[in-house]
Length: 173
Image (tube, rainbow, N blue to C red; front, side):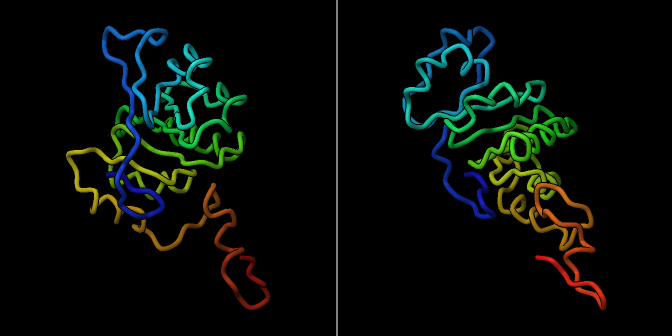
């Protein structure tokens, strides 16, 4: 199960994680909907781009610009959070949306906890795979922890002072 567009749904994608002895060039990618590591995509691109439904995931130390020429091929791009305290994935997501124009599903995977979801959606994530040892129903509530934000981000695109109507200020929506 994952959270997508603020609802809990069945996850029909498999995330491929390389084992200790797996090599990106030769690892077998199962048939069906698979989200592969960036290194597997780069090494097996010619074969994988023939597939109708393939996704890619980026580690927190990888650059989203690497996908610049291929970004429109993916219906899903995931960003891995190896630890709760590793915030590099927020920048990756923001850059995928704002700088590279990615419009498909952007999924947070790895050490994803309720406390992060509200902020993750602000930088462009629309799907979340919370840790399996936590309640997904509780995680879903994290998307609405705050009723308002002051500063702009990917969402919302306008600061609070531009969204609130006051005397002498015509609010923009």
